[in-house]
Image 1 (cartoon, rainbow, N blue to C red):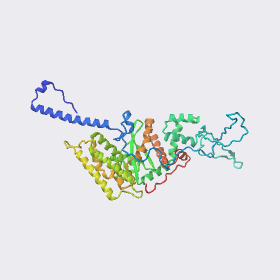
Image 2 (cartoon, rainbow, N blue to C red):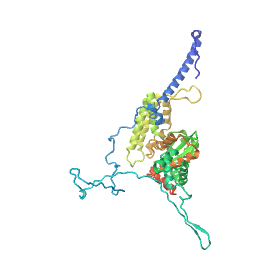
Image 3 (cartoon, rainbow, N blue to C red):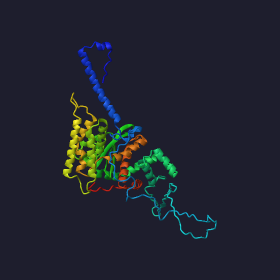
Image 4 (tube, rainbow, N blue to C red):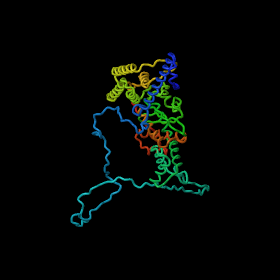
Length: 481
């Protein structure tokens, strides 16, 4: 926007009627543009993690007071009656027993050495023994055959290929600390030194991760195949810096499976390269990124938590009543689905139609509050965030309400966001990945680890078994999943 040149009093007095009218139109046009820019800037400043797609880390110290969209429950806070506790209880067979005898009476100083105790009081201390690395020496015999004179040597196990090397236990801990606990290489070396009194090289940690990736290929193939055959999957993507350049991390998951894949693109090209969506025939839950809809062989469902955040933004910034009504309706539908009888697979048709009619009513009220802008020039008209959200809720009505027609489809896409969360933590810790190969290795290990966690398998055991040539193969989900 080019600003109008300032006019002196003499120049202003010299303007005739047409000149004043032209000046007024120019000023009016600039004021309209300025009002639009001011509103856009106010919208940007008014966005936070509670009413937009922005992450909580972007709120800074000026984080607004939380406004939870959850309704207050009837239960009291804290542990509920009947829940399984985790109290530290005494064991029947402790590793060590230390006796504290009574030698003399504290009142009269009489010798009690020969008096039998009336009872024994027990207190147990749970502690860690000193950790140390054990060294096992493998000795192979060498014999000369008296018949032919050839040498015969003993066969060493696979973990003893060189004169010295680290065993699968050390490698498993190294890969665990780096791939699961997200420790940088230098801090992993320091932790080994502090805990075990032995400091391996950083290259050993990298090689341990590389070896894990080689061993878990059968598990990764099974994860991808099972995701492709699933009834419902959760998809998401987020930015990832590799070698100083912006790349993208794509995730596909279910309650029992996780798949991570890096790519230099965000859209459909990357999704095809990941290799699950092109062959998927179930329902894909996502946040509405346009590229997902290029895969029309599967059904789609949108994340309604994103919708609730955007509706809250419209309430706060534009004070529009339809947004509040739509929010209440979405939450009510979610509550009805959660409390439905367990044998139901969807809402009854009449109840579903009733909610769809209410949905249309709030869309109509939204159109009244957000009339379509007049087309003043060729091209797409610029719209307010409220109008954009309204159009999306109308255009993707079936995808928004998919959770009413199939109870396997969730109300939100929180599962995919949880799967991505730790990958963002990794980037915060390390800044970025240095090489593309290292990024692919890390994503492969995290796919294996996340799936193991979802299937209640110990992460360290899963990594160690993989290094021993026995990676776990994920169990297939039930048809209901």
